[in-house]
Amino acid sequence: MRILIAAYLLSLLIGLIGTFGWLGQERDPLSWVYVVMLGQPWVNWTYGLPDTLQPWISAATPLLNLLLLFALCRWARSEARQDR
Image (cartoon, rainbow, N blue to C red; front, side, top):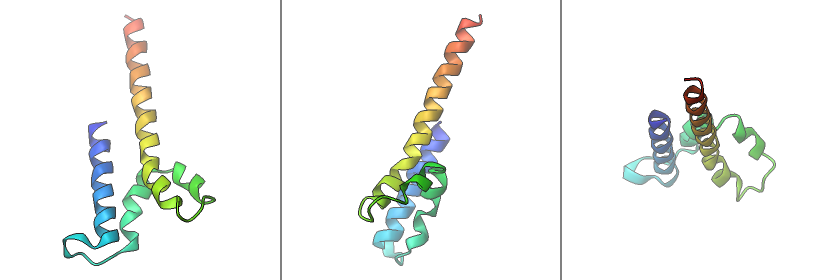
């Protein structure tokens, strides 16, 4: 979980740096590719949204994967405790 959270935060930082040209970096629209990969398959569902909302919701889609993973880990731990 911690590794995935760190990867998500790092990819958000890379996306922001590439979008706004921070730290002397040239602006690059492909800087969000890491966020898109972490947000699969949910990013594919954002293509019908308005253009103003799509980037924000696409950037938040990896949170769905994190929430699902967290729920699965909790469920697995509770199942392991019941099996004892």
